[in-house]
Length: 197
Image 1 (cartoon, rainbow, N blue to C red):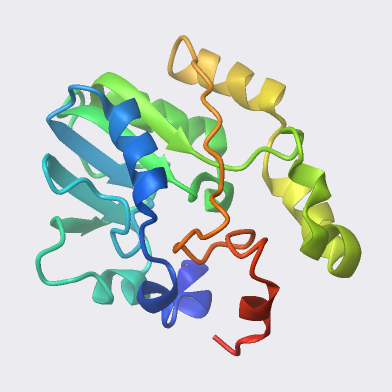
Image 2: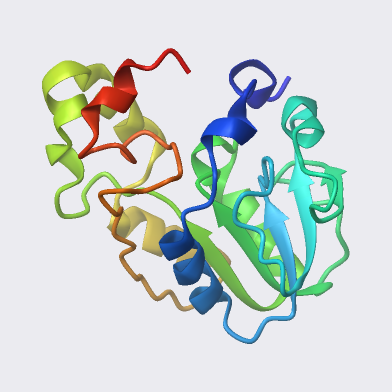
């Protein structure tokens, strides 16, 4: 069972695309007209101006996709149900830390993408990453766990270099009024962390 079959209930209501993060993803996709979205979830950051095919392992997440969302196949990053070189780009947004085999997932993304692979993720050794007050002062076990599932920037670029090719890293700042509800999105609005959702 996919982890999001358990933790993904109500996900679509809390994880909405932030336009500034979406713009960074759009810029990284460049001129790609067709995209495979790996670990697509509810489709938050799928570009509407391109041909997108979503791949998602969780039925709970697939059922939360909006009716106008891109078509979605059930599958995993390690064995994408897509032909080789079938899209201009492959993207993964905040999902790689849930994959069972990171290198195999990146090899699969490289296999299906003709031009580029775009990954949005968190790296534990990025400037300020360990200075987030919620995990630093209140929940250090979250930070300790995340350091076991998110590779460092050097490890990540080495894996990507082996599996995909040359790597370019572009930091994506989290705005103080971010509308996407991932863990550190409310860093300047602590009252949101007290809401039951």
